[in-house]
Length: 310
Image 1 (cartoon, one colour):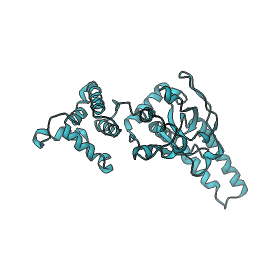
Image 2 (cartoon, helix red, strand yellow):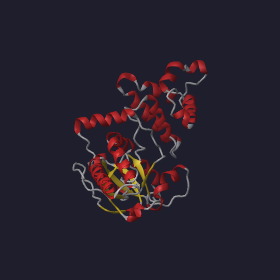
Image 3 (cartoon, one colour):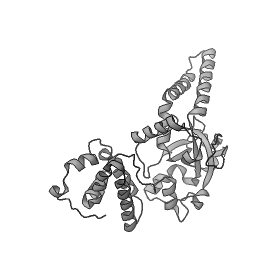
Image 4 (cartoon, one colour):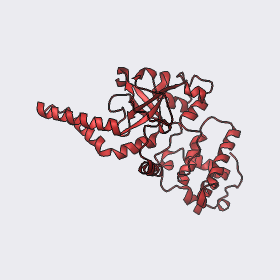
């Protein structure tokens, strides 16, 4: 954590959700693929409940999203964190950040960005529609001026409301390709990846050390565990991670954790599911669920062994 803090550039607000480039001011945002997790409606519902109870709290460092970016893309506006105090300054992008090839990587915070996108869907639609209309050559000077004024008014509203605090990390020369390079074991030379502890740092920054959460569905839990196990770790580390997940699931009230625990403790079944979920069509299928397997697939009848192995 001490080393990771050395790569932090600071905190700043930016518009997220219905824009991939901070309303045209910043680099194009890439979504990470390393331990990527699909949007879980349950998590979105939990965010909505928290907002209804406590407010958005999107300006507090404890709730910040994580973004990897080239240092030279940021001109200013960043601040250091005080966890109990909100930060109200927007990141200021340099001219280089507005070039077509400039990118940043969303390392952690996809659910929070999706929540903002849904909450301000109409405003984002109106903003992009007005920007498109402003480029219409057939507009009269008065119509063009009115349209540009509308763009400015809606844009200011989105900058002040549809924003979220981000912690920016220095990703050096490989900002746009960091996650892809890691996943494919390509050569890496950016700031974080140059560290001897690069794997631990990447795990931490993308929340890969966090076990699948209790609000996940049974199938989400197994999907998440499969993704976590794709990381380069020893057999002992894999067993420890699986044991930790099973122990957490079994503590869930109502016994709902029993189903994913059953799926991963039958060794051959879990290996089969891990291979199957590598195919996108099966991973996103609404029919291939852990609950249905638990209810209909008797391991003794199918010949799936009862041993626990990796």
